[in-house]
Structures are given as structure tokens and as C-alpha cells.
Length: 406
Figure 1 (spheres, rainbow, N blue to C red):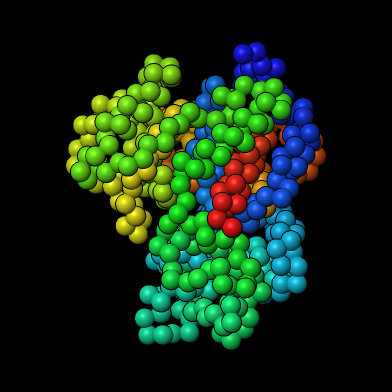
Figure 2: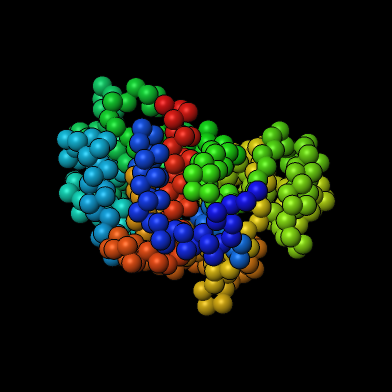
């Protein structure tokens, strides 16, 4: 099939020259969809394409963003909160429970600062009783950089979230619900964004990338772009049990199917569909590697965070990154608020090669300032513009996921 835009160079030129038109198109398709309050998108760039390879609806890592981007996002945070809860004055951030991760606490401190600078009184509120073994009203922690973190034991009164007797007007959810709390969220009257109904106890990468394919294909058709330039090939495989080896041959066949469509020497990522924190991922070059997987690797692929058993798998084209930092392979993570790009970082891993899983042991983060994207059209003549567009399209896909559960 003939495309107006058929290669990567043409795509980059097109995006830089049609920045406003493209963003208006994306903003238009966002209308009426439940765009998540925030999100982060991992993007890999090869010699042939750009492709999102993961999407997080409850992102950590705000502490890895440029300070200038954080400051520049205050208006966006304020506008987004006003859309959800126009009269809100007090904001509760619902954190993860891994409070021993001091870098995560730095992330919470940055997220709280961003919300406070947008004009809201902000506190951390948790419903995890394990954090308050003696029924404490709160716990006091210190982040890696020395920021005090006070997590309050949340209460629910007549459907309203309360913290130390004070009403919370709106909650920003930063807990991925891979281990869901026994709360009837539909009965909560306090607005919570993103909804806890789409946590990892339910969410599937397979479903997300199915929606992304539809969004990317529609975008590509509208602008006469070869859709392969903005997505990785994938297959969904169900009913796999790494412990008993059930379904491994079926999974291996899916691996070989994708490998056969790629250039020699390519690899594929086999990912747990409900995996998070880089867990449940293997990088292979043949289906035989799956079938002959040793017990140690099968154990790694079998169970993830909070003992979620992985039975649904995503087989995804391995996009070989050409991005480097200090001669080490890197990939881009873009952060968005209300579906609008506001910053990002590079994930760098000296222990991996350009085809490896960079979201693993050895990774470090390097700031990627994207603030120039908001100043004037001339500033969009960089690859940051492409990353921003890919991330926005991926977040539209996540809105379709949310729409399923509301």
C-alpha cells in the first residue's frame, strides 16, 4: 500500500511541520473520553520507527523530571483538578504502600509539591491497615532527599474520604491496586482520579495495546501515514501457566510468528499482561527459548507484584533502541497530565544492550527537559515532538480502558 508518509524521516518532518494540526486532532478525539488524570508512557525509537512499549496510569518517578517542567505543569494540574472537581480545596494523594522505597517517597514529595503549587492543600491518605498496625492516625516518614512524608490513615464517612477529621474534596490515586483494598469504590462520593477500578487487579497490557492499535491505525489513516512507523507488532496469548508449562508451546508459536516478520537478529519481549515495575518480562529470539525455559526463569514469569499469577501474556516486537546516554542504551518515558505531555526522562541501563529490557536491575534515570515544547512552534523541530505525539495517542488508548469499567 502506498502512503503519503512511508518512512521515519518523512514522519519526523511531517510532525514538525504540522504540530498544531496533529495536536488539535488528538485533542478532538480526547473529547468525551475519560482521560486519566496523569500517565506515563515508555517509548522506544529504532532506526525504522517510534513505538510505545508500556503505559502506566498511576505513575511514579515525578522526582526524575526537570524542575522547570514541574513548575511549568502547575497550571495544567490546576485546570485538570477544576475539570474534575471545580470547588475542590483539599486534595488527598493515595500512595502505594512500599514506604521503605525512599526514592518513591521522593516522587510523592514532588507530586505533593506540584499539587500545592497549583493552589491546593495536599495530604497523603492511605486505606492500607498494614501501614497502621496499632491503629495510628498517621505515620511520619523521610524521603531519600530528606523531605518529610506524613501518611494519614484515611476514613470514609457517608461516602466521603476523610483525613484527620477533615473532608478531602478530591483524591489523586497513585496506588496501582495490584492488591485491591476491600473498598466499594463505586459507593465513594469523593472524586478519585484515575479511577481505582482500572488497577492491575483487572488491567491488561493486551487490552491496552489492542486499543492503541486502533487509535494509531485511525491516526495513521487520517494523516496517510504507514501505521508501522508508530507501533510495535504484538500478539496476545491466554491461558499460560509457567509453573505447569501449560500453554508454553502456544506462546512459543506466537513468538516465532512475530520473529518471522522481523529482520534477522531481532528479538521479542514476552510480557505478563498484568505485570508492573518491570516484572514478568523475558526477551527471547525464538519460540524454542520459551518452550525450554528453565525453572528459575519460569518462576520469574509466573508470579508478580503482590503474588498476581501471570496467565495472560503479551508477545511484543523488540524495538531496538538507537537512543544512548554515555554510550549506554536508553529509552524515553513521557509524563502526561490530562493527556497533555508535560515532561519526561531517559531510562538508561549499562547492563543491557540495545535490544534488552531497560526497566530492570542496573537502570538509572536522566532528566529529559521537554519544557521547550510549550513555548512556540519553532521549538517543536526536535524528536521530543514525536515522543509527545506517541504518548498522547497511547493515553487516548488508556481512556478506552477506563471507559470499559465506568
